[in-house]
Length: 269
DNA sequence: AGCTCATGGCGAG
DNA sequence: TCGCCCTGAGCTG
Image (cartoon, rainbow, N blue to C red; front, side, top):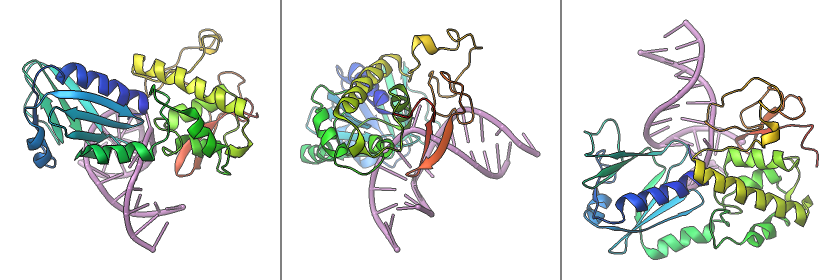
């Protein structure tokens, strides 16, 4: 269940765990058996994330390209790896730790050129130092597509998913159905800056928290609540509940095949 | 036990 | 725009 912040965390955790000693690489499920054999016993030399794509670079030059999709996930553990339970596409292990990958959309070896092609088709990632927000602005400012859809388009912006999309638009009071070309440069700069801040927090926390201190249930004198996805948010998956700020019912609709959530009162800009 | 839905994305049509 | 990929959590019963 990953947006970009989780992938960046996985890059860090893989590097920390498998960057010093050779890793045994296998595919208990068998679907990645051939690829696993090619990198088995190598040291992880480099780990990098771009948006929701994870790249693990091994010492002999191969890149392991992983995309978790909607329900893929990594599990890390210490000590010897237990007998595989269920379908484990990829297992990395050394003497002290192991990592299991289940249900990824993509788990494949890439050459440097193939990896470059993936970067080429992705937009700037707010979590990367080399990100150029102007590249996203050029597309947004020319587009008649809604800003809600543009923020989810990985060619425009990499790493933002449905939660960050809904939350950043709420935090800036931007109506989600506005065409990209109707945003001002100042609005875009504010969206980018907020994504950088929110997603950096997300990397540190391992969850998405977007509610400002003055709007927490405690600060507003309301009973505390628990979100199913682990973080505290304004509108994501809060359909028909009252807006934390103004009390209006949070609205939802299917928008470009994804669920969109927004507050029609707070988001009129 | 079975059903639905999900923080994603691809390819067919 | 739809179906599919293929996993797990949270319901219902």
